[in-house]
Length: 426
Figure 1 (tube, one colour):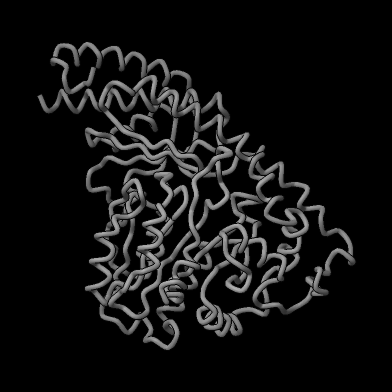
Figure 2 (cartoon, helix red, strand yellow; figure 1 turned 180 degrees about the horizontal axis):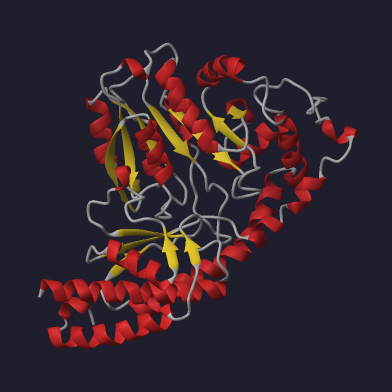
């Protein structure tokens, strides 16, 4: 029975029961931090052999004879370009390999737009106003970058197929100050939604009023399937080329949650013109990135089959955690009408929406009970969730046993916050 259908007397009785339950859990003195999507120690352990792939002088030369211990190879070694390109379904000619962080590449790409512009267009710093489209709920660090550069962020609601494309098409076609859009196309952070074929094709066919508009296409979870039958994402690079729109997209990929979060490799796929433009700046920025680490990854994974087998091991660790959280949510909240949540087939997050718009109260109760979640509002630009509804659940780091306790606390917090709000309204 939905809480909204209950009498005040029934709600008061339930409130007393929930307070008792909450105090019981609080007495356990839980100390769990679920604010970030971090791989667990056991996930990292399966990558330890990667560190032993380059141990002698002879190991430092790649298959093409490149000495990875010395300068050069600005675009990255061929093996690393091929590996990252295959992960996102394109070819190495579209790929540049950088250092350990795709977020770093995104930041630099926006910085270059401000200082020098793209492909001969005026630097964004010369514009009176720069706007960016932000699918919501979305990735907080994307929003932090755009806010850092002083851009105006425009919320784009997420649907089951990805961002609201009617809204995107209308906005970019009529406003030349809109210079870009964030996208997490597969197992989107935090909703777990994968863009439909139609959405990807419509993105690739955009006709922006700004000639230097770019899709910042962060394909962070491209191989993070929880099940053998994961979601399918078509190649946006190919779709852009079909539309004569090849310069519109920068696609980012990394091994941050595949090998080591701080010591992986990261790359960007783009058109030949965009790659040449980026390399013209890299020429002044660096003589080459860490090719030894690139070589380690190539030797360890070898090819896409190696990546898939590796990620199956990750899925064996992560899948029970997602299933545990979702089973507790369904058991405790399924019939109450107090929230909705996503059931992703991959990625790192579960997105929860309070139907009574009391996310802040839920967050505070969880914190009081010993579980720290991602801050309310983090999944929206400027940290402002207009409905106070969304909470991001990150199940990957704790153990299954810890997650059961955390999920129990969370559901009690959802119920208690919802009852409290209904009693205030009546």
